[in-house]
Amino acid sequence: MTNQEKFNELKGLNLNESFVSLAIVKEYKRDRVSHYNIEYVEIEKELETRLRNILLSRINKAGSFEEYSFDCPEPEEDLVRTIPYESTDFYKIMESLVILNPEEDKVDSVEDLVKAKSYIIILSNNEGIQLAGFKAIPENWKLKKSKGLIPLLFENNTFKDLETDNVFSISNTVDFLFYKELLFILSKKAFEQGMNFRDGMIAKANSLYEETEELNLFVNIDILKNRVGNNQRYLRKLATIQNLGYYKDQSYLAKFKFVNESKNWGIEFDNGQIVITDETLDDVLTVLQNKRLYSELSEEDFDVESVKKLG
Image (cartoon, rainbow, N blue to C red; front, top):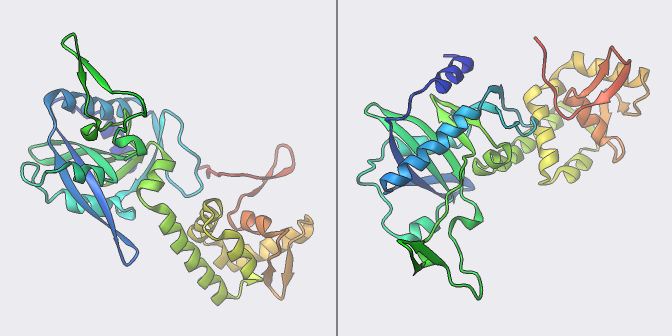
């Protein structure tokens, strides 16, 4: 099934009779690799309806989709971005989730809730999970007492003292939806944080350094390493460069050298190697991302933040 078919099917789902569940996700690191523990949380009927409506609202607002890339901008209100779930940590989360029993594998203490990193709203039927919505837990997940104020709950025309130690808040949206092995991303920033994409981008950067050193591509690669560090903007650039692979394409590199000279971009080459300087580093990265483009209409060159291939 294509992504378009999955998107169309998602838009047409009738989820009004689906069972609603809520699960929390706790994360721990082993050898710098994330692992996840999942537990269900009992919820009352009134909350089931509200949780279901959170997911239905996001589905209704989604009017179109585009594939996720490291350098894509945040999606607009009616746009979602797609990525196969097996290329993210959500694959590991789902592996743990599908083997759980909602009636047995449940949270049994407030401490478990406090330790949670995220939660999942789950809609299911007798055949299994139909749809899931993931939300990274914000700092205000557990409500805190404000200094000098006593929290009160107005119920049955009476104020009651609200014990905030056990009060938690849930957002009216989610970061992404899971449907048939595909993630539909609503917030790129939250998705990347929740799925530990910074760690993945650092790994890609280190892999790219090794490859380019083997290819003898750069002079002064230390300038590149020092500039990038853990800077997410530069890590995105390197991840995009590695995914595209133009740095391994000798034909592309030859054209790079020729156009650079003909248009006086100022990037230096030394015996076929690209010379990195503090002044030209950004230009080099832009070209290797194929983001220095020429407009046939205005006959001007542009550096662009995001590209979308036509056809």
